[in-house]
Length: 124
Ligand SMILES: CC(C)(COP(=O)(O)OP(=O)(O)OC[C@H]1O[C@@H](n2cnc3c(N)ncnc32)[C@H](O)[C@@H]1OP(=O)(O)O)[C@@H](O)C(=O)NCCC(=O)NCCS
Image (cartoon, rainbow, N blue to C red; front, side, top):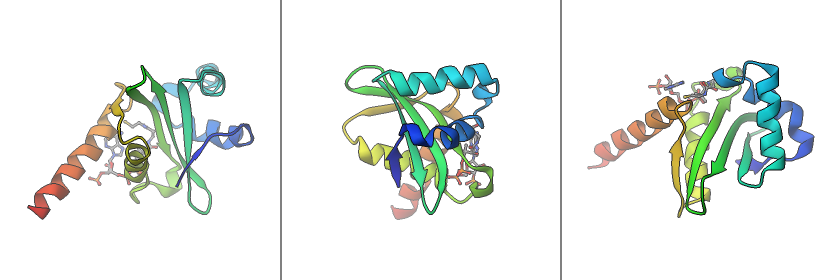
């Protein structure tokens, strides 16, 4: 399930965020963490099963629209559908919002849409 970031998750959150190609430099990663901690329109969610194994970070552009800036899954838990579950859970948590990716999360976001469309076709 998705849980809201709290300060005591800082280390695990930074570890997960560092898997983003855009967050390889420690300086950049620290700036991103500060943004999530200090700016109200930036929000970070962790994916918890037995352990915390994924992260998804968003920013509200305005009341109606938000962007996904970061999405990462612990490498030991990849290819098990966690990334897709996080995107689905975010959409379910914010059903009346318009959710778009940034250029850095677009490939996977589109992959999630594509797989959802494939499933729809199977039902038809
Ligand atoms: C992207 C990421 C979150 C996917 O997590 P995951 O839990 O392994 O994803 P799922 O198991 O739900 O889905 C796996 C599918 O997504 C695809 N996929 C993985 N990374 C992808 C990417 N960067 N772009 C597009 N598709 C991607 C896989 O090829 C796989 O496809 P398949 O179902 O046809 O085999 C994970 O690979 C990750 O943390 N990557 C590093 C961070 C990153 O680059 N994030 C931005 C991605 S645009």
